[in-house]
Length: 324
Image 1 (tube, one colour):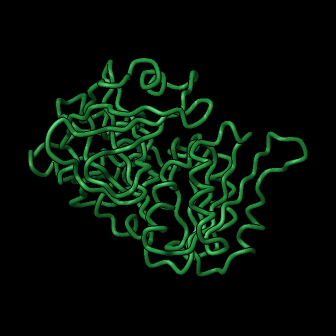
Image 2: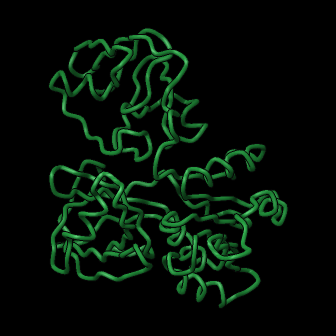
């Protein structure tokens, strides 16, 4: 399945999951939808040329996708469009699923930590773990229960086989409740567990620090927004990019991304987030060493230098050749 393929879907269900969160049930207008794995997301093409990424929350089904969207009046408009303009019967264009946050189905135990709307990819993981009969602990951080989407469903999933599966809720907007102590979470579980986290930047930063000493293959993160100024590196010099299939060489100046230069020179490229968090612009590297600044590739994938995210990553030397 090519990541550039798109599919028309119809909205056949809308549910209120929390105070500011709605879920949308998307069915194919014709045929079957591409398969997906727990942790995957899709691009949803909205009005005015907006494209947004939303995690799939449902089980591994072929007849529908389910996404959840938190209304954010301070955002760029995608969530407002979903809440205000999308209704039952609306048709949308979506991409095939991509997964840069996969579940390790061979883990001895899974510990999942969600902050707010970060629950969405982790819910799909919990469903899959239950299907496989595997153990898990889920830590859910929110201000108050009314703002915790899918809370009742998680409680039901955890109640069936406690203590092999347990839900731990931290509502730090309530009197006397403090934020989740990630050091305590790490100490409470065997070190060969797999640890997952998705949520706001402070939670992600604390998670990265707390679990930094564990083997990287046991620590899994997904960002919904790139950390502030994290895409800036030490070297911001100009470099050249050669397009191997076109025989064209372009100069990327210090203040422009590879993606911007390509588009300015009439080379159409798929992209969405422009923050290095969605994976849409992943491009194969033919020659040269990328300066990876994304939040998608694993350490092993970065070390291989086989692909790069051209919306944020640059070049460690003077030249790159890309499979374009």
